[in-house]
Image (cartoon, rainbow, N blue to C red; front, side, top):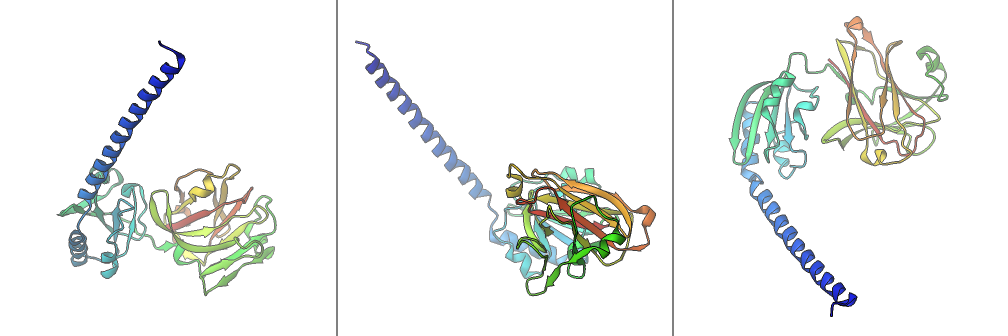
Length: 316
């Protein structure tokens, strides 16, 4: 007799069988995936050989990129040779302001070498070391910066504006400001107010790369002003910025605004949106090229809840 109870029992048996088959499929698939990943892991000797090859052909202003950004198991070999390096996901989309030539150590087939020509890079070499591939690229003329903001934060002047009204002219702001304090023990600018009101250089994983950046938690009641010492301008100032993933997950998160001055000239007011990403802005400075100017950054937001904001800037 085909009763509702018997139909339910058959449905449960069939569902249980399907679930069991699905579990077996997922288990086998996962095992095969991780087995394939394991077989692609470069041997320690391959890392040593690649680092040795770089060291032998090293030139001043070279830099090393490691792809993908999580392939960190043997980074000690680069430290041993004192080679400057960082991890990234998308080599050709990144800025490399410290480099004239870039070595790329690639594993897991995560690089598309043909994309180099799209950004004006010239490939100078390619070598295989086990499951590692080593590339060498010549970057475009003028790529290397003469000034990097993270190198000059300690000598800057950091202060707070009096309110969150439209930005004051620089000459007025310098009079009506609240000074922040440099703590050399922890290499950090501390500003009056909440404990999170600080500015410092950090190494931070942001948007697919390990980045050396300036952390500056914006405020809704004050404007953070970072005044760098005068430097000679070139053709453009590049400003890059982003928020932490945690910050962008906040429902009430607000964008961050950065007004950039060269001396008393406002170059632009930039907007960092409340979403994941590493945003690049290129500000032309050709009319000021060759002149010594103080670079000034005014940072603010309308809602300062969990605004973990990071930025960097360089001249070229």
